[in-house]
Structures are given as C-alpha cells and as structure tokens.
Image 1 (cartoon, rainbow, N blue to C red):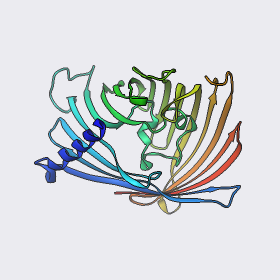
Image 2: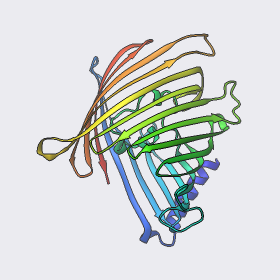
Image 3: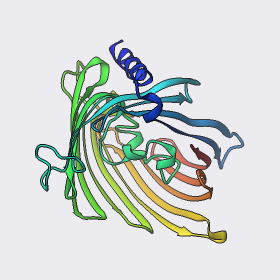
Image 4: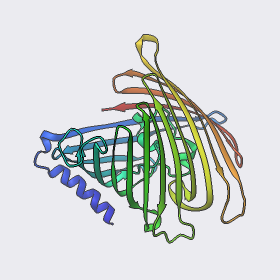
Length: 327
C-alpha cells in the first residue's frame, strides 16, 4: 500500500543521502518488562519495546528520520515511523516572519505519532515516568501512529499542531491541538480529532483538554478526554466515552546520590452510552504508584503498582517491573 511504500522511501532516501556519514545520528532504546498479577501465580516477562532511530540532517531546514521498532504482539520488527521535517521558520535562522509572533514553523510529513493531547510525547519507554499509560488514553486515542501531514509552530507563549492523517477504515481524518503557556513552567492545551470521510455509521470524534506543570523537582500532568465511536485508537460502536487522569511525579536524589522518581496517578474512564445497547454504563478507575531509579547513565529501573476497579469485571492488582536501556 501507499503508506508502506512511503515509509520505504523515507528509509531508502535516508540511507542514500550523500552526506550520510557526516550527518547521520543513530539512537535507540529497549525495555524489558515483567508483569505479575498479585492474585495469580501467572506472570509475563517480555521484550516490551525496542527501537532504533536513524536521523539525517540534510540541510539547515530539512531533516529525515526513520525508526525500526519491535512489535511485541507480532514478535517482529516493523517500520515504526518515517518522516520528513521541513523547518520553514526557525528563530535561529533569518527568514520571513521571524519575530515575536511566530518564532518557529515546521511541516512534518510521514508516519508519525499523532500529537493529540500531551501523552503522545511519552509513547517511548524512556520518556514515560510510569510504566503503563493512563486508562483514558488506552481506551480512546491509544498510541495513535499514522501516515500524516502535520503543520506545527508557535513561540514562547503558545504552540499549535494542525494535521491531516489516515483515519479509520481507509478514511481521512483531521485534528488540531493548541497550547498556551501563560508561564514558562505551565502549559494548557485543547485538542480535537475527527474523521472526514468515514464510512462508519458513527463518525469517530475525540475532544480533549490537557494541563502540564513542571520544574526541576516535580511534574504535574492531567488530561480530560471525551470520545465517540473510537476505542483504543480504532473505529468502534461503543458510543460516547469520557475519562481523565491526574499524575504527580517527584524527582529527588536518593541514597548513593542516585536520581530517583516517585509518582502517583489516578485515572477514570466511563462508557456513558452504547449505540447497540442503550444506556449501558461501564466504568474503570485505576490508581498507579511508581518508583524509578537511574542506576547508571542510560540505565533505569522502574517498579509500578496498578490497582484497577472495573465495574464489569471487578478488581485487578498488577505489579510491573521494567528495565530501560538507551543508547
């Protein structure tokens, strides 16, 4: 299909660049994960994520990136992403409209993580302070990665993303996020995503708001999401669903001068209607506790306790351990 041909083109073009060896950057990470239900002897130990990224800066304004990723469900490597990033306006370069109103403007085209809300910024294990994502993210947009064109920019007071992407069931979709930064450490955002040409009876739509406050010692994040006709990133007839999470993480120096992180998150997701069965309601609430430690440079160990209360299935208590290596 066209999206696979495009991703192949991105990787091929990257490798064929004339200044490859001078400009190519190689990075990546892997994480090993152990999952233990506290009310069962069954456990899972697996390679959860493995990614290798190749980035080539072709010029001052153009860069190309391709990512090979291990699919733990299919047990094989796939092209996780591949895209071109064109800087039209850069505050470090002289150019039209450079100034206080618009200090940067980029166009990104390819297979990308869709910038809905703020959780997409931590799909990769090294970027996520916890091990698992919030329940409302899992049951709405999930880790949405699609072929898309994204126009993004802003300045120190605001930022924006406007994107057109491949939707569900061979349809087209569009979305946007606008973020405001009233203070350097505080960001408030609003996101919207919907299909344009969906053949489904119910057009998937998602609306979200987000908040993030961070400094050297703590990080506070929250998102409120309402979705219709979308479940775990795919078109669905579950109806209208909503949920939120509130996450607090503290950074501190522990014994032996090792960096520690400790965090807590509360999340809730509610199915408020069902198109097939009127007014059926199901809710899931989840409390997450996490402790992380950086043993040496590029090596981190996290332990997470997850307590979920599912109105339909009852309670579930899980203990996760994760080893993250970056290179």
